[in-house]
Image (cartoon, rainbow, N blue to C red; front, side, top):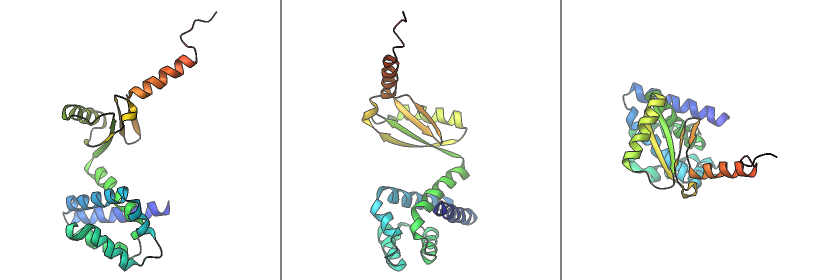
Length: 185
């Protein structure tokens, strides 16, 4: 919990600084990339959290991983984090920044899970439906999960619409196991 509060505060500071310096989009691109790297590489996060590795070595690895691709503002921010020995919460800071950016820009994140890859027409319909219900711009992340058999699952914030075939089959199985369709004598 403490790490999340620290991450929130650092992310908020970066957001405010980026807005003030008119570099919000650059900071968002960098933090989104850092968050994706941390979410994909558990070893990288474990390395950042290691108390055995010194801060200057961590900074060297961060520079090698991201190279010169980070904007000056983001690189300076990461340097400050490392100086204050907060590199262990870099993943949380990046994720918190991305969330705060979306909140600032009034963007809803929709996670869409389907059995097969979405085509552009269906993606546009989902974006329109989420935009209508949330009243915000929509950013979609797609995930393919063949185990849902068909249909789709849409998650926006703490809401979920489950229109998957597997859920419907499980519901039918439950109904049949309760003998809901057998007349009582």
